[in-house]
Length: 167
Length: 105
Image (cartoon, rainbow over all chains, first blue to last red; front, side, top):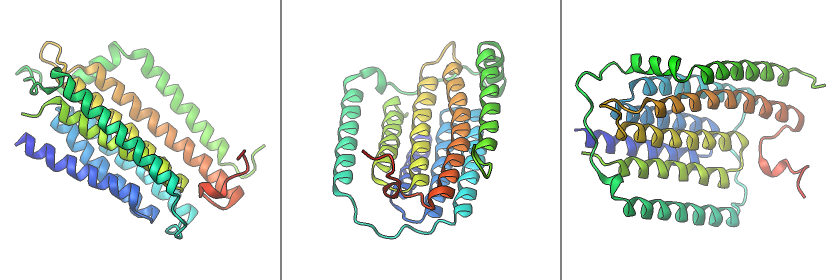
């Protein structure tokens, strides 16, 4: 059952990601990216990371992609007109991707530790969000505060950047 | 049952697709979307490692914390990057990388 779900969602994710890379209208790209993120959230849930899955849906597939769609509509981008495809870019990208995948496959094939089956969780370990909260506020309290400051700085920066006249 | 290598392979494929998109596409906003895809591919492998490296029967929550922080930083990065793209569009009226060549050597 879990294996079937894994294959369904990873196929969906890869197909939507192919759509992002190959579709020409920016709106279709953004919507494929939403689909890819939703399938990725489902993969997180198959890994028992419920909180991360929900955050992925809310933040990445929700807030971030709405921002992308707003900007695409604001700039009124149409489908790109056909320009001559740069052969060198295509060949370079193909070669790098091929080498990357080949290297990854060889590393995975060479390490037997990576092919062991999924270990069972402890029976009582069900409250994912409580564990996340404990870890976040005990071991990661300082990074949590820092990330708050980072978000504040980003907000101020966006407001500054989007003023009509940059000084 | 699913071995860890399946998850790593899928995450590697997603990363490679994002990388290819960054190299081939010519629209700044779509390049930005491909960057997001690469970040989430890294998230997938982090969550998979956290689930397979159990600590006393719990997933390794420190890995999931890293994913949490990556998602937050990615959101901040998208907000800033899109603001920069809008400022650029106001000045140059384009988001096509081939038309933005004033810093080209």
